[in-house]
Image 1: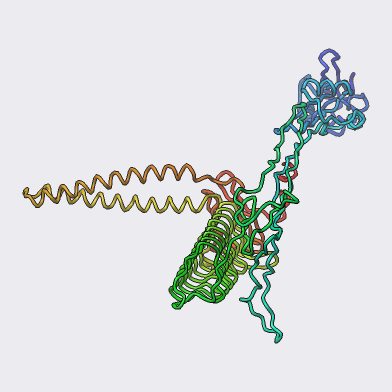
Image 2: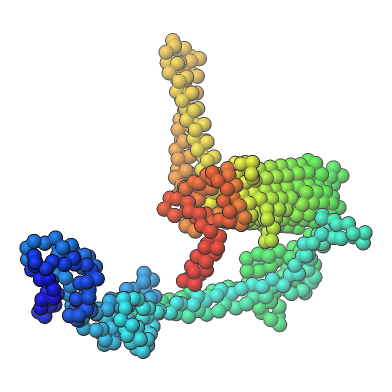
Length: 560
């Protein structure tokens, strides 16, 4: 039908296509606009069809410039449609709705057929909600099915009934505070309950949107440890352990043992070095040059200066540690701090502060106050400053497998402070030592080879022949040694696993001069940063706001 100035619209019912036909009128020419064409389309009841803005602009331009007749596609009839998208974990099905433009509308039956074709059978929402969604007739999405996440069972738990020591300084009647006196060491009496076992809890299976069952973790009903030294199972309640004797309780995996204790006033020239197959409590100081070994726990209530301490259990020192060597199979607790010393634990280490010291822990390191120019190496996490305290990591290096957290990293004087996460520092240390040994080996081989060449250029003599044979023997030893180092190095590299979720957390500030390394990615701070969380992704370190990181972690927990 002719609209005006030679323009008409024709809808082909077979092809479902709307065409615009234009015949120029030279006598009565008008200026075409998008608004004018939309008005004519509305008057002809074509505006409900699918007509793109680009088609309208093209038609306006062509009509205003054409000198000959033309026919172009302007729009089309479109039926409503939908598609189903399944999440990667197959726990969510999303319906995407595309509305009709002059064509057929989408019915509830159409949606059901779409769901049936996709194989969705579990967790479907009600038909009423689907119909309400379709009635909006707008392009949008709707979650139409949700699976049921499995509920993991819980392993048997072991609750310690040993009284906890209150780590608070003693205040005298005069009001003075003794920070070295943190209360009595805990001991248990004969027959005293020391642990309760809480049986395992069963889990629950889940189901995805396809109706497939998802298995769950079955909680393990773990019994008490077979090591019951100094304890026995309560005859009236087989879920409890009791102490057989008066002694020091020691928590072990899935149990408790109670050990006899050796108590000394101090360790000095008068007492001599100490070695005891049990627990040791020293009420006073360990003086210069002394050595103490305890098969189990070692507790020192005084100071330690230039001493060597080793124990198979936990090491607790209430006073200060200066210029000493500490080693423990269990936890190390240094309530008076550590200066210019070395501490190694297969478990965790906690200290009031660390200055110019090397601290290595198989699990966690906690520095309550600050760390200054120290080397901190942990198999799990490093935390500088307990909750509520704003403390700093200044200088040195803090290297943990999973996480390093502090209130402030570095100083305003741009002291170089290295933070590293994402790999095991103990394995890396062994790799570095082996690489140093290989370098030494190569240098020695080169030196011997030069000597052999030099001897070969001299006149032969019995003495030179003997020297040449000796050098040849040493060279063969070095070659065998190098092969051994190479094999050891290959094994260590295979075990140097990178941790996917390793992170560095700054509770308050990161100063200029910090070097943050996560796995193989390195970031050197050239400006001061506020509260931040550092994570590695695809070989680069990303910095996120602390609140964003918290929300992200909560979202991950919900998805799990």
